Amino acid sequence: MTVLLNAGPWLAVPPPTYGGIENVVAALVPELRRRGVRVVLATVGASSLPVDRKVVVFDDGQFPLLQQPYNQVAGIAAAHLHAVVAELQQRHDIDLVHDHQEAFGPTVLSALGAAGPPVLHTLHWDPAKYPELYRQFGAGRLFVNGVSASQLADAPLALRARSVGHVHLATPLAAGPLPAASARPVGRHLVVLGRITPYKGQHVAAALAHRLRRDVVLAGPVGPYTTALELATAGEQAATNPDVRYWYEQVAPLVDGARVRWVGSLAPAARDRMVSSAAATLFPLDWEEPGGTAVVESLALGTPVIGYRRGCLPELVSSGRTGWLVEPGDVDALAAAVDAVSRIDRTECRRDAVERFTPARMAEQYLALYRTVLARTARTAAAVPTRALPPRW
Image (tube, rainbow, N blue to C red; front, side, top):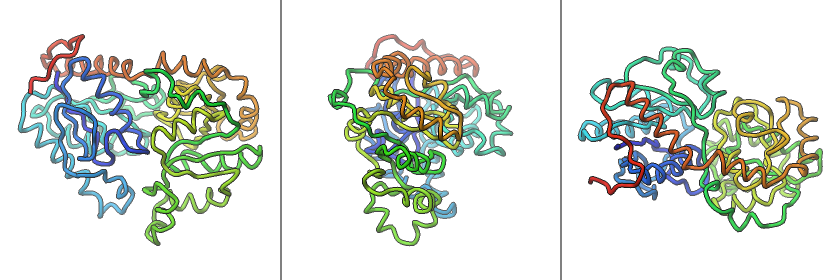
């Protein structure tokens, strides 16, 4: 089987620091190739993940431009998809496209119709984000999968009609021995992982830190800015970014550098050290989180999860066993959960991640979806081999 996997033009695969979709792709591709799947990766030139072929327009990730005005950045997604379509038109050995590019991906690829291979589009975001697009989602050779059951349950009917199921996200951290950092003594600090944005609730976590007198570390970019220096020198244009405004108006006043610290985007090793030594990771979400990459990373490091019972969290966290989930908005219950987190057995967190969130498990589930899509589009596909075969190229 030959699959063109479209990661989009925003970040390298794997990403050097922050990156949700790109981390998922980086975990999936090696496992697919171990199973004999040839992978064409549509990405940026800085990607270092071994694949059979790369399709590239931009040398580096375009993430710093992602939240610029539409008329300045619309061509980025278009140029990337144009190269993907050109690749599909030039070669005829690609059995399926596995697309991860938001909105543009399914729109452009579905327009190919019978002239292109079948498409499986993975939804990584809130399906309510584009109601006009998803309400008229068409039939044909395009199918979708969710990254949680809750995400699909809230999706428009037309989108659900094209669904072939859901696959939870995975992390390589669950596939091998715990990093050496995980042997460090557990501290009292709490961690919030993810982009600094109202959806992630960093202002709630920061206020909770002062209330409970517990240190909280915020890790993730503010808009496109990955360090305090980048943000401080960004100039007036930074204020147009909604995440930057959220930072300055609701989070920064609570960040004192001691009780609450922002450390920017961390490289994987530094992130793992910080999370594995934390008492818990916090997810006081203000939206229906669809996937929860940081949740499975935390569990894989043996660190309990505390958050609001919404979105995908009830599917990923067993409250009372691998963390605590409380009703959305109940800050008192959130505070009580922090006090009770020492009762969680950290080996249970790790064990659960090893059983449920490994890249190998994710790859097997995606291979099953690939077969389903190929069968539904009445294309004849070779049986997926159970052992790795050398590339035909």
